[in-house]
Image 1 (cartoon, rainbow, N blue to C red):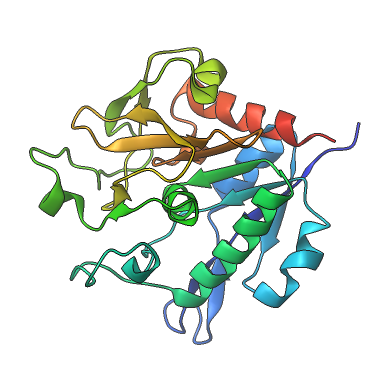
Image 2: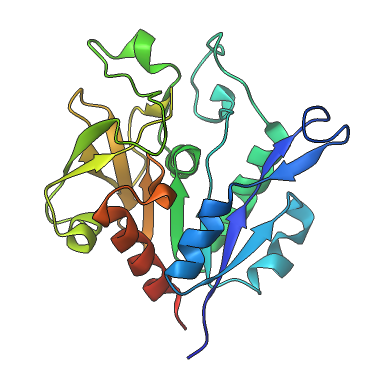
Length: 236
């Protein structure tokens, strides 16, 4: 049986730090989680003009997170909150490849900022900064990422619930933004104790799930189950 090829979007950094030149970056555990679940990870640089050709190589798509935000102009969010930092070329590429992956019915998994991008692409909006918008909010920028930050309540009768087989789950948490209003035909699949939306799924698609935490750390059994189900859905 052919192993599915899973495209994983890369982060981008300007010159400085690791290299004086602009460079791409990706934590190894994204690729490790894909390979452990039976897929072949393929890293995707930001070339919108190559999206059509790139998609011919892929059986599934992971939109990763990163230390940046989507420009609020994409969802009518008004002025940028002072904490908002954008990477516009990365967002342009991720919107382009995700839009066409949806049209091709490729399995899609959005992680952290990837969930937010999915929701925006599907017509939803975002909370620009949780501490300023959610009363009695939890600490969603919890460290270390290798430990649980809080639990989530999983919505029954969702694809995510069928995958995990549990009604609650411990997750890590490293984000200051979140889904505000869900997009068209998007279902809330999990919420945090403070009401912050933690997982969504697009109901008009065979497998399109966004999660606000980082399941590639696999701190809960449900994280591994999510990757296994995602890879299984990508087998052609």
